[in-house]
Length: 134
Figure 1 (cartoon, rainbow, N blue to C red):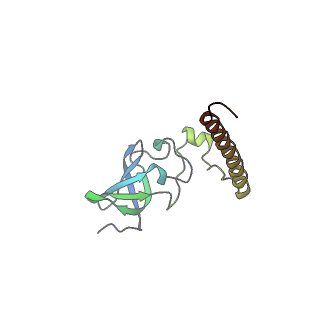
Figure 2: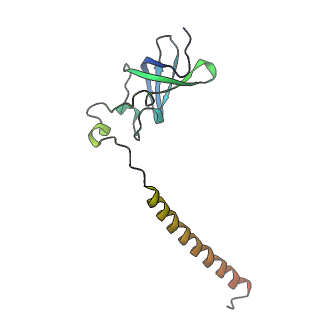
Figure 3: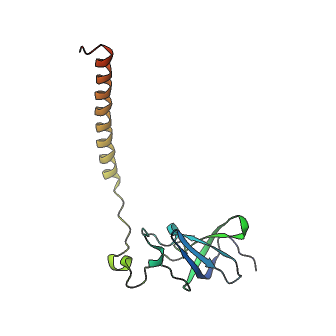
């Protein structure tokens, strides 16, 4: 049976890496679940969520050269950290995104500061061109 992109499979974690985990599907093919595809929250350590031998549901999202596949666990069901890991103790809620108004305020502050710095730079450049006279 061939692996199809967009289909959910149940696989086994065969290797945990710094940047993700290699998952073997029942058909014998394998692929990578990148660290960003484990859960919706920030993942600092893959081993907080996945360990060798774990069974995990993954969605095949793409195919790479050499018959390897790209997979996602978070698109099926975001994983939770194993008990006793630092992520489980701290909680793994994603940070709230700033509201639109907060963004507009921050952007306005940035633009104001940026314009002030640009004006100061232009003034100092003009002073140097005139030989120190204002």
